Image 1 (cartoon, rainbow, N blue to C red):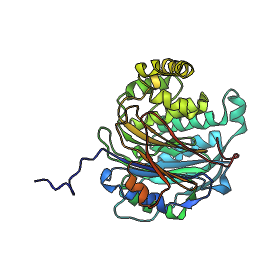
Image 2: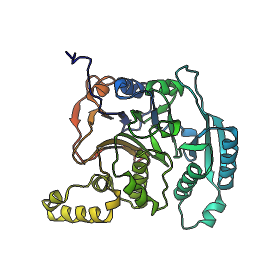
Image 3: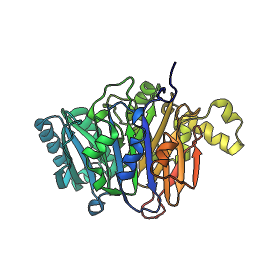
Image 4: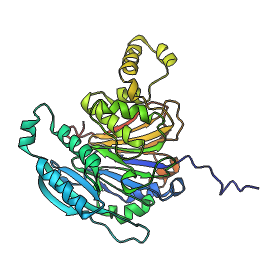
Length: 366
């Protein structure tokens, strides 16, 4: 007879996000505790964190967090960077020895500015376009080099291991930020490697994901039309690039982004009020290649806030809570109560409907 107290059916991966909408910074302790409480949802083949607001002394510089397989890969990547950027500062990413973290790559951090000659040469591109193109090119072309994050005043820390071990390895309790997200991986159909751990990131966007994108092939080909090339061997990569395309390049708000990625069924659209129906029709037709099929729940981090989103029929769990200025989005309510025992409000995400937390400081919000 099965003991129901110890028997469970995992629904794959753990995700967690904590944000202080006032912009107050806090350490990585709570996000580590939150994701560690869902230990059984991952299997040690990937864990990671994203944090925003941690480099106030370099807030105007792009922070490139790099992984190198070899010193030759580092030399090639640095030559690539110097051709396009002024390297303001560089340093080894601080870590602590842990016996459970194995086969670690060379981990390095660069604070950079786009060289004026690049903006003069590519005058039709924004600085963010130039940085994004450089990141995609390194990941595709530079052997033995991988960019784990590339935004301003934020960084991604990830690798092979359980998330709580990755947090300890990167000494995240020593960092302060106003927004933290975390992921514990349970890979089902893609290889496990340091660069394939979550979060996935481009510029200020980060994505942690529980689920499976069965439309990956269509989404990947759609993104290639806009200059995005997937090279990281996992379906989650397309979500990050689609968010960048829709929100940054095409200026859609998060309700519209959600309606494109988790589009309502056509019969639902036909029952909407006229004005809403026309918007939904236009988004469904225009962004058909961006529709994500398959079960998913994601937490998206960005410079101005945090967004939680389920697939349109909610095949993966997601719970949110609020206490004061803090907003929590996790796979399980227990992961929220592990660090916030008495939230003021707790609610389950609705399929296809975004949960949006936003910085209240106008200068910081986007």
